[in-house]
Amino acid sequence: MWDITDAYAHVGLPRFGSLTQLIRYMDIHKVRRSVAVLGPLVPDIATVTEATSTYSDRLRMVGIPFGETKEERLETVQLQLDAGALGIRFEYREAMENLELLDAVGARGRWAYGIDACRDQQIAGMYLNWLGTYPDARVAAPHFMYPNFSATDRERAGGAIAELMGHPRFYGILVRNLGMCGSAYPHSEFKAWITYVMEKCGSDHLLWGSEYPVLLWRNEGADAAIELFREFLGAFSEGQFAQVVGGNAVELFFSGNPPTVAPVVIPEWIDQKFQRSRKVTFFPKGLELATEEYSRLLDDYLRSPEFEQGYSMSDYLLRSWRTKQ
Image (cartoon, rainbow, N blue to C red):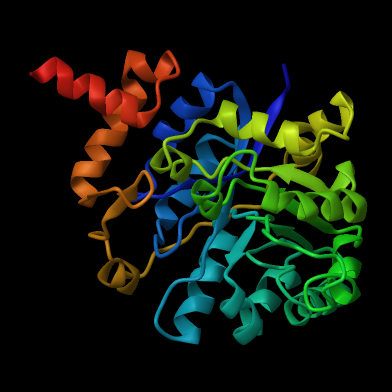
């Protein structure tokens, strides 16, 4: 129905999977292109280099800061930008406390993928200043969903927040937040925020993200996640919604040449500090798996006929369990 481009998928071995697995997921769900973002604490820079050299027609990469010191984190940011990353994902605290990293991104005219960029007036003002300093840089805000919002709350609306939302180089990425899993359909506590976002950003400055493979951990699929936002954005025409789930991202990320790629050497300290044994939590917080076990499960699921037929991960696990009895 729509030409889908996912503005916020995760990738990175071992926790968030391989590029091959991401492409398999995209093919089954008819996602033409994706912006693949390294997951938190997963500095899989080899995947960045592989994506930019092998999948430049379908993928753009966004990196993450990594390291124990500001110097290490700056080094990893520069490495990923050299490797062809479109930009860098910033948590709230990192963006507020480590402006040198944002400067490195802005100086190259790349993207800041700013988590919670509109959470309060302080961070919104910071991003406004950054955009003013770097005229070729842009901000995208993943997880652009807030519950129990009020347009009369001066800390959460108006001021720098409204100005940032209206900025020509700002884009909100609508992702079904984990917090929504604990709320009852139709998630009415988010509707005031959506109304405000539609007014301030318009259809030209909104994008859609699946947060693959995390949505699988929540027992969801891309189709349902898109349908949810079609309902939320019901006041948008079909053409406007098509912009949100694909057209805008194609124009922003894929219409021109990908970032220039330079050879990189990944320092040994990154591998030494990479914590690969973090467990993965499912459904949500109902099942916890070791990374190695989860990696096998993800691969088996994505290769299974059940995945092709639209079965959720929990349905797949249940069918597999019954088969073994």
